[in-house]
Image (cartoon, rainbow, N blue to C red; front, side, top):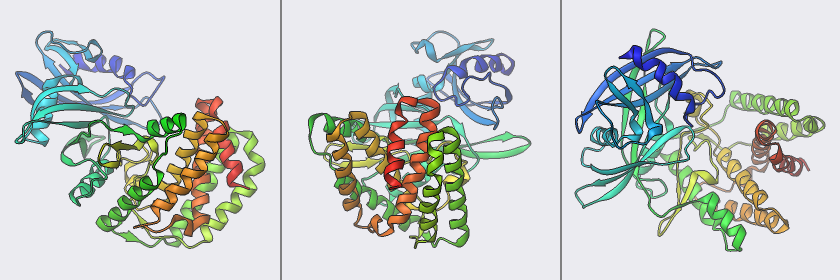
Length: 419
């Protein structure tokens, strides 16, 4: 069966949103297919594929189902036909969802399942289930790119959920697995099941609607929610003081990012001297303790739930950073800087002087709200300015390469931060 499956996966994977090596022909160098169970008479398989098409090998998880005949499954989920039968992407097959719930949340019985559209790096399955209370809905997130170690999205959300906060979805269960690559045994997180919060809107859409209608955006409570989560992360995982090595490493990263931005956007070259001064002041200033953080915080990572308020999602960190780096203690103000930049993007998307005033207002309200359990970020103004500048320079490189029409947004922020 492996001989049949390998070329089918090589042809099917590049068409998927989660396939990260774009515009290259897959070069599968390892393929491990294991039958992990059966559900409703359907074989559930787990394929682990190591693709070396790009500079760095990427290990993908491809859950599969094997059926002897046709089924009511979207055509795009058909991987192909093997000598053993039809192979489908498991995430689109209710049989896989039923098996996954049985492994992670034995008290839940699947009634219906559907794939959440629009995701880039993972695949989420919305599951209507029966439980002791009658019925509810949960969400199962399947990690497509695998890494050896614990995924912070599970590690952090599970700890926060068990601490009793309502600022993250309730954790229900997770699935780990192992595979062999390059002669070594590796293991990592494959999926997580958690509460599905119905009727929620992501904060990006809430912000744009407020900009359109003039309704107030509750940035104060968003800041308070962020502060609460940072305080809990510090409590659950501890903190440590930043050492000289931490300062030196971060200063080097800032300088490298600035040089890369100047190469990508020549108009930034004359500003490097001023940027270096911002970074020098930040490196020499007092730093708060380092702790676990969200790692990729912006309006798209928060939802507003009726009767519950702001809820934080997706603690995986920046997907392109190595897993070991994403699990290290960091500056909580990196998350704050990311949200401040997100406000700027929302305002720029709406355009106009009213939107500019909105951005300034919600920035102040967010920081006011944050200055509760975790302290006021403005007490570390030099460090916050450096982190926000670093984020804006990263955005400038991204926009120059992918969306030149949007380059004006980070460039305006760089000018403001260097005044």
